[in-house]
Amino acid sequence: MTSDRDTQTAILAGGCFWCLEAVFVELDGVLEVKSGYIGGRRPNPTYEQVCTGTTGHAEAVRVEYDPAIITYDDLLDVFFSIHDPTTLNRQGHDVGSQYRSAIFPLDDDQERRAREALQRVSDQRIYDAPLVTALEQATEFYPAEQYHDDYFARNPNQPYCAAVIAPKVAKFRKQHLERLRRPQPQL
Image 1 (cartoon, rainbow, N blue to C red):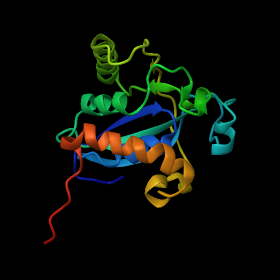
Image 2 (image 1 turned 120 degrees about the vertical axis):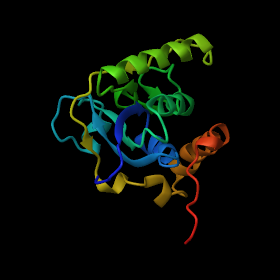
Image 3 (image 1 turned 90 degrees about the horizontal axis):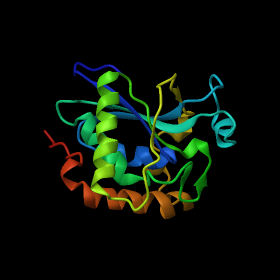
Image 4 (image 1 turned 90 degrees about the vertical axis):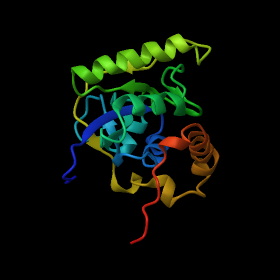
């Protein structure tokens, strides 16, 4: 990604990466979202390999953002509101370690902020059960196959998209209206 802006990167895993991407692309200040795999043992894993749950990878998103518009803390707030951080290796019907809730800090500041966010969400008692979101060392991020890009936007009527992702996006829009990307005026 080439830009004159000062950009930063966050890597988050919270279930199916199609769900995460569909939300994060709508945030003002997010410049790019790429689905991929992180935290596993096999180099260059494929979607089929990761889906077996045997590679150790999580489905995740790499979020490139402009910190002058949206902060890492803002991204974490959204992250904790769009998935269930209390279910170990599971999000709804998606079951396996590839669907775990995890934050992959890229530096000491992100790790500190992630720890603070975990404590804040826990202290707020938003969830009835304890958080299981892990802080994991960021290993190499492997971009997912191209057909995963903009999956929800390209396939809104696909059964999984309609039943799982669409309600999640609608809930996100309602909860985070002030953070949504604004349409650009026509010149």
